Image 1 (cartoon, rainbow, N blue to C red):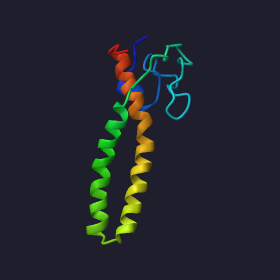
Image 2 (cartoon, helix red, strand yellow):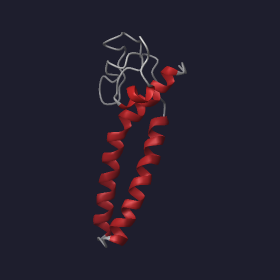
Image 3 (tube, rainbow, N blue to C red):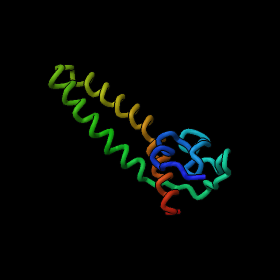
Image 4 (cartoon, one colour):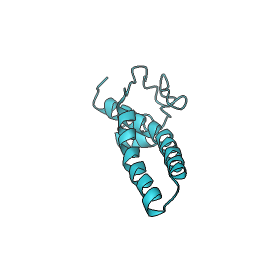
Length: 113
C-alpha cells in the first residue's frame, strides 16, 4: 500500500499512513491509533507550528479586512472591530485542525517523531 500525500491526508484530516481513517478523536486531540490501518499516533505532536501558521495566515486576511471596513466602507470603529474579531476567531477555529493534521502528516512522512 502506498502512503497518501501528506498534504492530501492532512487537509482531509485523515491518517497519514493509509489516508482513510480519521486522525482526530475530538476537535484537536489525536487518536491513539488509526481506526483503519492501526497506525500508532501516540507520539503525534505538531507542537506550536500549526498555531503560528494559522495566526500568520489569518492575520494576512483580517488586517486588510479591517482597513477595508473602516476606510473603504466607512463603518463605525466598533462595528468594524467586531466584524474583524469575529472573522479572526472563526477563521482560526476552522483552520487549526487542517493545519495541525497537515503538519503531523508531514512529520509522519519524514519520520520526524
